[in-house]
Image (cartoon, rainbow, N blue to C red; front, top):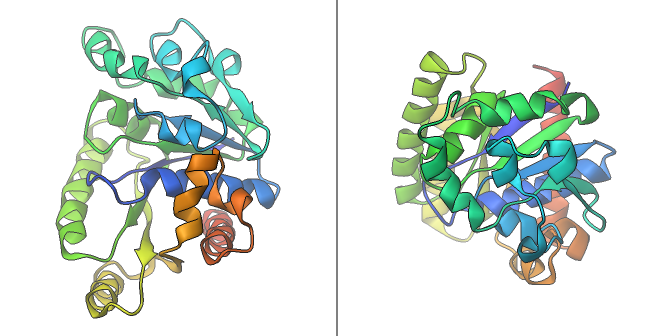
Length: 256
């Protein structure tokens, strides 16, 4: 059975998609079977995995509306080493269409149940808002990985996300928990970032991953080549950090 994780943060621009595709590539390098589910209508995780969102015949949109299965809609990211359930602009319409449907927040869970034996990890890239799409992700996940920058506003956004997770845990998914907080785009030369990092460690303790992802230009360049940074430049600081994070993820799951 696959372990299903949402990569989520209600604040935009914090590196959710970068975290999703690079963690997936790192896990694949370690021999894990991985599926990435792109729940963001922008389709950045799809493009960043080497799959053209404009040429998708079937997408996560079709899966949510139950007109296709994941087995039919997924594609192999040949260079990235994992499978992708892609997304494109069509997905924005699913928000409206799901409102009147039965089991609207559990559609993804039902679909993943059919393929969960084929994977070790399923990583879900969530949009920044708390929408019906994000709710579908949270309802089927075992836990949430929260990428965050060590800045003041990030702390404010974190409290909103923790409250959301508590509500979903209480009402829809009793398995849901925060797996860990991942510090991303970290620059140790900035005093404020060091201070916020220390605050996180003090407040959340072992919920903060030991691995820290540095600010790295090669990670930023990789999506324009349709590749995760781990594949684009395996020797870069960012790529090495994500492979180490993948190892830490495997260890943390094994000890759960």
